[in-house]
Image 1: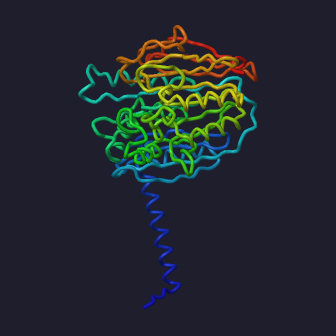
Image 2: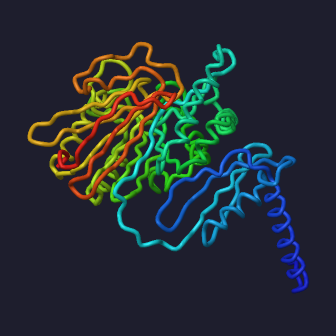
Image 3: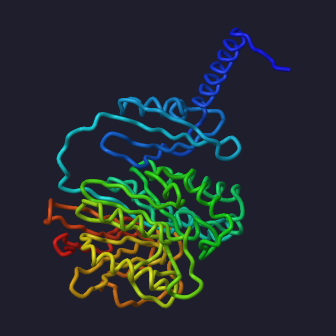
Length: 422
């Protein structure tokens, strides 16, 4: 039997639905902000924000979501937001803010931070307050005048099987985000990120990790990158541009296949490499920064590195030379030490790679201390972070790389001239 509904029923249903929506929205506005707002990807007319909220009593007005959104409304011409469930009574609120683009000349200088390996010491390893002492590095980073930050992986560490479930992954990320020094830093400037093995799955995990789609889902919930992979090729890779420089975030885990014949091994996968090549050919920026969780240029005998995938590595080197791609600088993490590497090429400019690691994790216990690419005086085996500053205009631009210890002391500084990358 067909059931018919009167117009009055539809009016009543619509009114009820509207009332429930408003009720839900009003409830959300009363939620307590427990992390953020973290700025994410931004342009000259838009900005994105990530906010973690929880349904719990709010003692101070400034901690209500409604208050945080009102502050954003005062800074931008308009904002819109949506929320999504995360875990139990905690939700993520994503804000898209808009403003009229200002016509401003290119800056004479801008800077960005980088770092990797932000291990949070559990109770059993937290001897002598290691976690508290090492997390102070984020206070120094928050005080740094930087336009944005790029995390190059191991942004959290899944341990003791936390990689075996959505619940375990989410809870680890939440514990990190709610720590005061990290939360303070995340609010200080826009944040971009790629991943490495420890915020993807177990140690050295690759394309065969059975929960890789769960890991990808969690990563996307925790960050505010411009996008994630392609429609037919999921992952965390993306790109963006700032101040006439281009930035490429690579995914060295989702498609990594390290077994089998050398010619079939792949760190990034064919589709991701095709994407990177297309983007590099279209890129108009002076410097082209490529971020990878795995080191790309040194040839090493321990740890993860691109030389374990020789065919893919050589194909990319051939592409750079054939297409005359200028201004490339690589930034990586993972190694639990920092260094500046320089790969010299015949009849072409040298390829620099700045490896910056660790932020808070233990330092390198056994990896190679020598390689034929390292620039003298740049090896650092202690907790540290990097600051890259772009100075000047046109071919006179330079990239200044500075490495600081966790107390904010400058350890070394080098400059790479754009004219030397032509």
